[in-house]
Length: 220
Ligand code: SF4
Ligand code: SF4
Image (tube, rainbow, N blue to C red; front, side, top):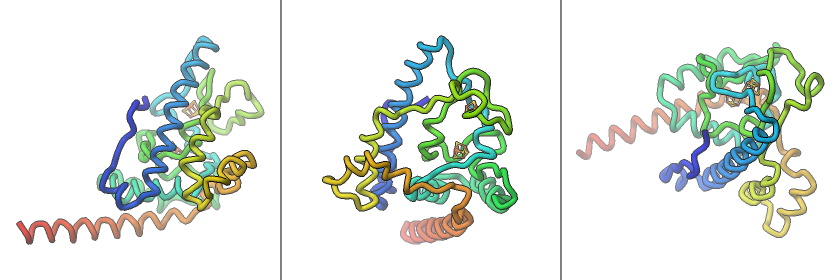
């Protein structure tokens, strides 16, 4: 369940100003999603099938992401995750072979949970299914398109005002670029990205934290 107030990471946000805008946009998306799902549930008389541990949508799917969504994941895995969770992500990344087809998302935990939940991409926040939970290999858009529900459309422009400046878009240009589908032209499938670089980031962050800790002990 989304919180009314957005999670804050003051030190990290001070170091990475893009992170504040990304987290703001995610928060707008989550608040809009909450309202949209409540309305849709009332209309249909039943809640969505989506629930914790249901993770077919995290396997065998294209996951469109923009540069800052993937940067959010790099940051979270390297700086926030504990070592046990990082070990699972490392193992998943080593096993990740999209060229062999049908890969699972490398951020799916062994328990079927999202290990990067606070920074999961927009598609993972906004895609919902009513009726039966998804089955592996099912083509939802062909077989039961009425069960697919994508949330937060009405506040997409607000999200654009947070995100487009990160791509160098000036304020005067945001509205017309939004209307011409600027963001979808900037998305790539998560599976096609050099995700193994996350391991390098994890190692660098661990070395930096070790050095910081050593410095703190030396001065105490
Ligand atoms: S989209 Fe499908 S697989 Fe994913 S949580 Fe919802 S019902 Fe489960
Ligand atoms: S980022 Fe999380 S929610 Fe999205 S596909 Fe991967 S495991 Fe699933």
